[in-house]
Image 1 (spheres, helix red, strand yellow):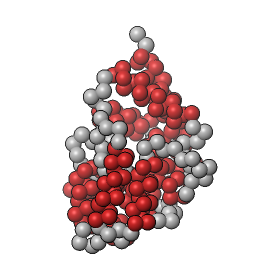
Image 2 (tube, helix red, strand yellow):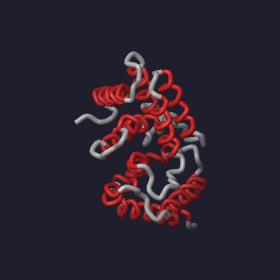
Image 3 (cartoon, rainbow, N blue to C red):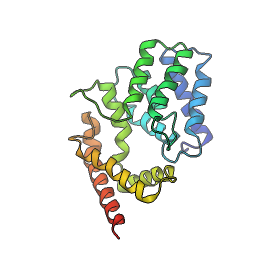
Image 4 (spheres, rainbow, N blue to C red):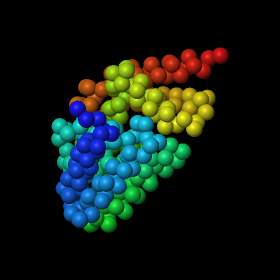
Length: 222
C-alpha cells in the first residue's frame, strides 16, 4: 500500500484533482497545471499535518457521502489549506482568493467558484449560523473535523503534527492558545452537523478534546 508521500500516490491524487477540475468545468489545458500546483503546495516541508495525507483523508471520508455538487466540494478540499503559513492569520482568506484566481483563469463557471470559495472561507471558524446548513457545507466541515474523532493514538499523532507546525510558538503561549481552541470546540452543542459523521465521530472527538485539555492543564502546573 502506498502512502500519501509515495510518488505513485501523489500522481494518483494529482490525477484526482484534474478529474475534479474538469468536472467543475475547468479548461482542459489548464487543469493539469493547477492540479500540479496544488499538489506541490501540500507537499511543502513545513506541513506536518496539513499536507497531502490530509487531502487524501478528506476525499476518502467524503467519497461515499451524497453531495449536491461533488466537484465543488472536492475542489474545496484541495483549496481549503492550499495557502498554509502557521504564522499567518489569513490562510483561509488567502486560500479562497487563490481558488478564485486559479479557477477563474481556468474558465470555471462563476457559480462554482463562488461555492468553492465559500466552502473554503467557512473553515476559518467552522461556525455555521444556519440551524440546518446546506448538506454540502455540513459534510465538508464535518470531514475536516473528523480527525478529532480518531483513535487515541491517531489523535495523538495529529496533535503532535500540529504542534510541530507551530514549533515557533513558545510552549506557554501554545498551551494557552490551544486550550482556548479546544474549550471553544467542547462548548459547541454538537461538533458534527451531519448524522453520519456525528454517529461515527462525536463521542470519540469529545473524549479526545477533554483528554488533551486535561493534559494541557497538568503540564501547566508547577
